[in-house]
Image 1 (cartoon, rainbow, N blue to C red):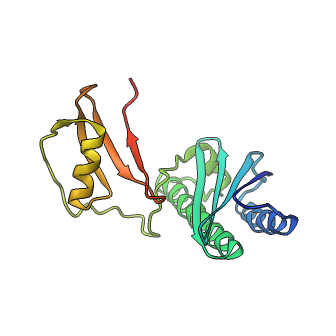
Image 2 (cartoon, rainbow, N blue to C red; image 1 turned 90 degrees about the horizontal axis):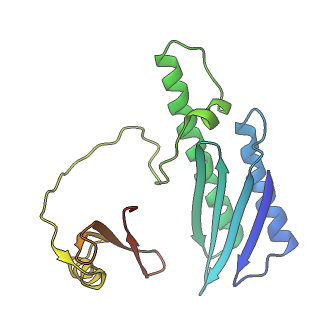
Length: 186
C-alpha cells in the first residue's frame, strides 16, 4: 500500500507518520495479496481535538473511517479498529453468500471483486431492523428555511422539496457544526 499522509493544522512528524503506517499496514493480513491502492490519511487538529480520517479505495469497495480523540495515537488506534470491523463484516457477508450458493469457503480477496461498501458505520450485527416508518408531505422551501426547520425540530437532518429546483433535497448537520446539502444528480 502507498501512504498519502496529510496534516491540517498539525505537522506530520516522522514519528506520527511511522506510527500511522505501521498500524494501517496491519490490515494487510486480511488480504491474500496486499491491495495496490493508495491509502489516504488526513490528520487534523481543531481546538484540543485531534482527528484522523483514513480512506482505502479498492475495486468495488471503499474502506473509510474517521475518529476523534484528544491524543493522535489513540485516535489512530480507534480508526484502525473501526476499519478492521468493516473488513470482518464484509468478509463475513461475502463468505455467507458463497456458502449459500454451495461454493467452498472463500477468503477476503473475493471481497474486492464482490462487495460494495455502504459507508455507514454499522454495528457488528448483520441484521438491519427498521423500527419506525414515517410518511409526510414535502413542503417547498429554500435551503435556509430547511436548516431552520431542522434546528427547530432538533433533528440531525431534514428532507424537503427545494423551491427553486422542485427536487427532493436533504440538509444535515455535520460533526464540525456546519451544514451539508444532498441533492440528486440532474
